[in-house]
Image 1 (spheres, one colour):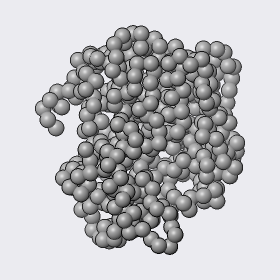
Image 2: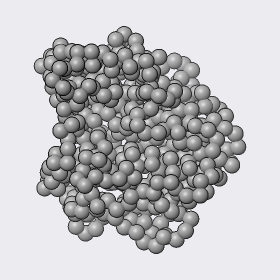
Image 3: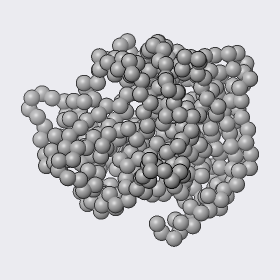
Image 4: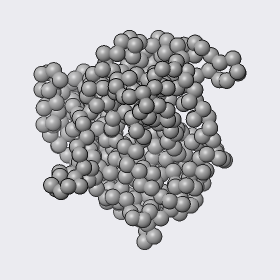
Length: 451
């Protein structure tokens, strides 16, 4: 890391917390409760899902005031985010809200020596982590913590909005539905344009008893107790954002579709083309043996896949992991369409019947997943370039930067975002072991298409 980058990281770590408060729905709602369903429970031992949005602008106090006022208004419809998790005597989890609860946590901080441009970095998230709350906090801690924490940090020429959402209650689609709705209210709309569909039991109403209960704190990074069964420390990771322009995306997609099959099969989508591009080049950067296995994982939105389909406004988790497995030799020695075809078929096969079987399997034998359980030598994709991340405008312009935090990161984790330049551009936020990342950065066939 360059000396200047190290200096900036030290400065960010020294930010000053200037205030802490809680925001609740503006009006009384009484007591509300909804059980968590089978789609929610696999993520209970993941960490809170973290996002960072950086805005230019002056008048920090006015911005904070507007954000708090808008938050109180939007929580009238998205009140589950102002609640807590609850567990009954049988181990069944639910999300509850009551007027007596604290609501959403809002932290105010000062880092006026940091500029918006300083945070437009393409390198690791460690330099950003102090701007986002709840580092290393498990979703199961929502039993006694707020389900949403917001940190608003004053910058030299703007504001950094760090958010931590409890992933056991919402997925990416619901996250950005909430963020867009909050921005609409702050921008002057009298009400939310698309109300959240809050009754999770309409998609699944099986009560799942979790025994033993999920962990209530993260012991993964706890200091070693000196015993023989202490787990080895994972190699250090590096993160980087690779920015794929429209022309780069078109070039990658054209290459993958250049040897289109004549059997009438569908052409490969933008996602499938970029997915196999990343899978192949990350696998090459890892310098694995031909006989080693490698897994590609994508968390697919199931709202239109379930029977009956659920509305896009369904508020909760309605995603499932889809796995594709092959050997390194087959993936690398065959043309790109080999891996793309595997990904395409796996996604297409994950229909209502497959979703139902996955749910029944979990309900028969519930398994508390760790966030690293994505497969051996994996490339695992979360988030989606469909999400309108650069359209979240609270009244002072669109964000200059959108990033993920340090939570739920492991070797091979990828977050995809729509590029700031719009159109078909895509930003890929990739985490890899340091050596593999260095080789990926030097891979001309991978980065040549990147602006």
